[in-house]
Length: 159
Image (cartoon, rainbow, N blue to C red):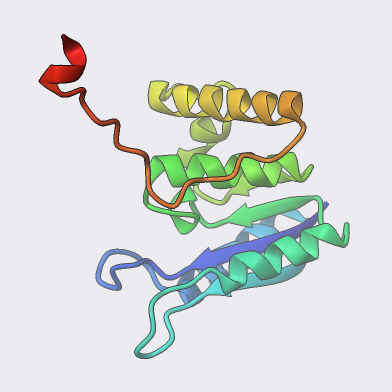
């Protein structure tokens, strides 16, 4: 199987392994599994700038060419430390027709369908419903810049 690796520095550099160490874990997994590594895309923290998603966008570009059938991450935390963001990114990648693989055995259950984590089940259900809605309406949902805050009626309006 042709695989694209994805690694990312964490937003807090003191929390986890750096991208170069994650890339080595990806290469070791590829070597042990016998799959073909197409590329390793990485998001690293440039000096004085915030951590971006250029590597993720590059990976999406590679996937669009059909050169890879799967994405390999060293762990789901490489996508994001946030479960909701992880599930959105997993949903996006799966919608593009690729498998998502983690080199961390502890992630196998989280990638399963359905996962054992009830929060992930809920998130996947919401994402499926959004996709159904978009398909039914025939146009993508346009996110609002700010969530609308409902105004409460005044006393005069209630009477």
